[in-house]
Image 1 (cartoon, helix red, strand yellow):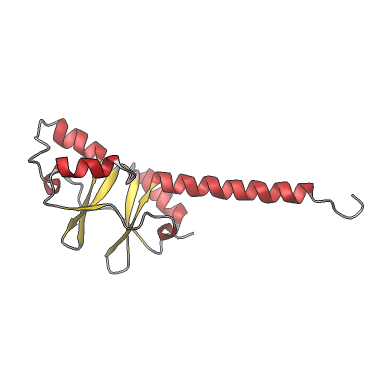
Image 2: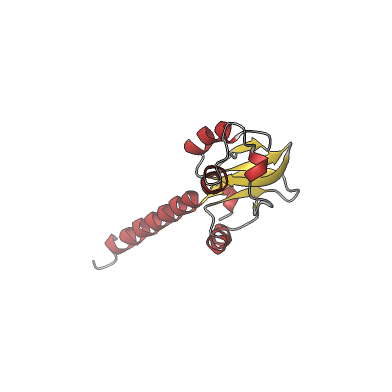
Length: 144
């Protein structure tokens, strides 16, 4: 399955000029543990809760005045709309991250893929497979 099929659309995104204080409520909602950071309409980086803890709080910076662009992770690792979910999951594990922006072939941000999206999709697939196996095993065949 393509990653874009289970990605969050629209993706959680903020501008590089936003302050950390402005971004925290977005990260605390159902958006997950990070956001895409945009410079206009271009993906400039990502910002995670860990980035905020280490680079802002840990360094004693003021969240009310610190700009996202000053502490974001850049360049942003991303997957394309053609990336398969298994490949995206491997990339997350290899990079030790919990999310990836999903971009189209032109580099335009189209979605936000979080590890929880991949796990939810996998659990649903396993459930469907178990239901199918149960139906097969419980079917009363010829002579049964």
